[in-house]
Image (cartoon, rainbow, N blue to C red; front, side, top):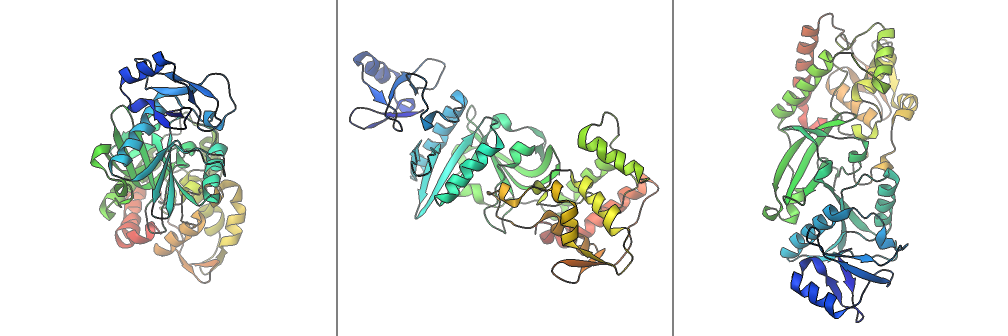
Length: 397
């Protein structure tokens, strides 16, 4: 912990004190106590570590939960000082007894309270959900900033996005893009990733901006930074091309099972209609890749229907319910659009389906299956131009 109290209840933060002052307190034998459990703590102020306090013995104090080492301590201190520098009403390591949680930073803006968590370690998903539920019950808005030790960037607009990282995607309103934040205490740089589209189970594209924290003010975390329609079309065109040309060597797990199913139907990724593997912003709710569940819908449900046939959203959601996560699993995201419904809206924009009621769509045209990969790539690009260049606002709906 970064803070402790003395016998008079005064809060002391070792990390912002000069070393000679710390040595003097040690020499004088000044006593400090945990602000949560009131048990004695000792000063830790080595040359290679950020100065902090630790319990004298093993304790079940709530302040011991989620300790992540020096990287974590340094990061939350820098974030705290950044907010304090901008004259914001901010508290460090404040224990909230009514929910038995201790956010790294508690920020008060007018009548709103915001808990900022700097998360560096990969802890169980249930623990993240439990903390978010606690904040929600107290009317506190949680904002999670992930340690840069979890930030793996593949290229200018591509990064690693596995099931653990997806939990920290934020959407602050129905109109705002998906966003995630990473912070590196060693460089004091922050990475803001916005307009996130998940491309497969371990990867996503997003508008990535990296900058020194000192050049950013708190409201800057929420300024929209979106792909232009041209940028998004080119990025997704490349995704579709890689999908078409990906080899089937060394496949395993869900991807191997999907390929096996696809081949049993007499198809190959190169043959599939362009309606498979389209961008869906709510993909975080699915536990299989875009092409997996979209191809199941296209080949098993839409394709067998005749022109004019009606397709119920409810029946499809029932068939694919084991492939979806509850929207409640992502309390940081305020959009409640179901991915299957969003996909059907996309197919409507493509002229393949037409909504006839709140729960059903009518089939307007047959899919085109390709014989040559060159034709498939051309077809993909034409469809993406139609969907993104003409309906870029609807892609994010």
